Length: 284
Image (cartoon, rainbow, N blue to C red; front, side):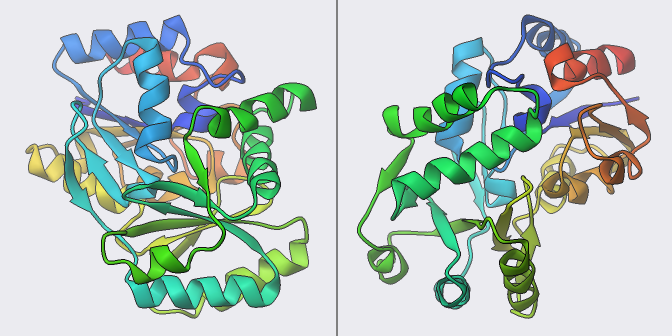
């Protein structure tokens, strides 16, 4: 029996318009009514995740920033798994030396030092999850982060790295060069304590090894007396693999790549066809 359901957001719970469909919402509410714990596990910051959940009228715990932060349905932080300041500085130096753009996700929000490149990075995530969408819609969705104040522009990141009030949760790096990306991943993987994944064709996500969706989800269910064998996870991309590989029922979206589908027990419908809702109703 499934007692906990974890769902990714982009390309999974959200459709191409970055919305939660009525079918997905109804299935989540039905699961919650039956006592099933439904948790969102996303690479997004809490601010970007809760914006969409509130818009849909849903309340769920959030495993955010790939597991760097866990919050209650009311938004209270219960766990953080940040990078050390030294890890952050070393990763930043590698990316800068290669000329790779990156954003910094922190406990005080998300920061960029280049708005145009920040828009390009999110377009890549949206396009990877929703390849059928027009470029106009992708750009509009990416710009929304800045319009709604979900990302702040700073001159440089040094104050974040030096100020103890900032916890660094994640770097979202972006490059149009596959060779540059590959070299960046190679160098970053040689750094102790880092987890390297991706949520799009052209990006690299850098977190602490403890800040992975699967690690955070395992701790989340254990605290509630739930086994991972009683947990279902739904995802579509590389940064979902750590949870898909650990749970009793792993569900891939139809819009996921073959590599992701090959790791899963079941393939549901696409994110534009409310695949999450269908997968939930199937186990209920």
